[in-house]
Image: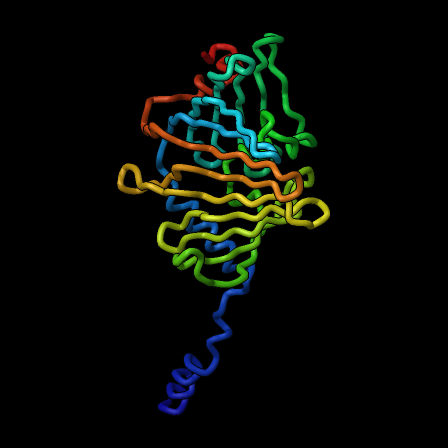
Length: 260
């Protein structure tokens, strides 16, 4: 009996690989943990400045109001309303993210007074002339990707994990994304996007995370650089607020026309 117990105890030390996670399992667990930590915010509102910069460095600016509704068991709902400049004033974008089917997205164009549905095959196109694609405007639900942990390292003095995620959607404009996540706050600090030819297309950097409600981390800025056309887009966030009493009615298709 003592010999059997001794062998059992030794096996705990000499075969640790039997319990080691694969790179795919580890990547998935990292994504699941980050998602769990950012659950429970309910609804959110914020204002944004979108700064578009062309290859020559010329800039133009747009003012946007954003709001989001957390949906447990499916993807989140969000709306963006453009206030300036005059040529886009009143334009509104509505997105229903889904976990196991294509997202639903609509764009209200006040000049035409009609709602345009964004087809799944067109979601890799640019969002309102920016370097963000329509698919970038959806919430990043765990089941929308498969994952693989690549390594741990330091980035700008921070301890980060590096994972690869591959979109499940066949209409995605990306073959894969490489994500650097801050180990302390479990949020991305950098993402590289690779196009359908598996060439580096864009890099997104998250700047100035702050904590709200003693739990939820949100960035001050998101900077997207397109390496293939030389353009970039900077999103500057302010006036975050939570638990505003938003409901599904604030995110139905009719709310696009009511948006002011």
